Length: 206
Image 1 (cartoon, helix red, strand yellow):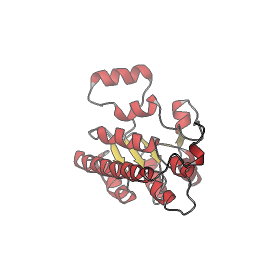
Image 2: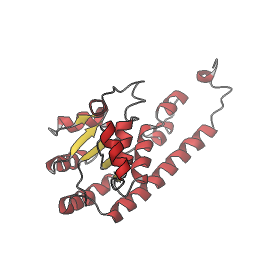
Image 3: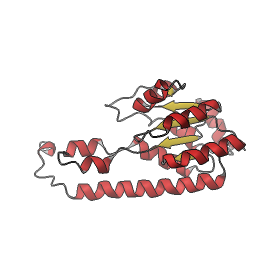
């Protein structure tokens, strides 16, 4: 079983992150992160590499583009048992990312506010998060994906014991991802169905 080398952590719900990131670092796992999550990990005295440093490309467009990069998604989606994938990764300097710990922008909480505008709602539609999650869940044979802090303990226990999680755990967590992203997209679609485009000033003049 291949040992976990690298984790990407980017969280809205940061509960338990200090202990989780600290335990991974103690096991020799390199931690990649973004924005406020990277700051929280770093402020806890844990070594962390910003994704922008990892990719050599800055966050841009007010944070809309952070993790959408071949070095990130190639690192997640490459099949470790596929020689052609490994040759391509070596050719392009793509390093494996073995754990994705991500939760999504709080769209539902945002639109529940009485003062929520359409612009507020749109900016709280997560793009990078679901993309990371779905990529990791698709490649569950090689990648552990976590959307719920309640799963940190089991993941750490398995890594401490064998260097990686079990296939059974990775599959269970992948199913959890598709349940989450399906519900997330449904919530967004249902809210947007109630928007009157013709009478919304922020959409006029396009």
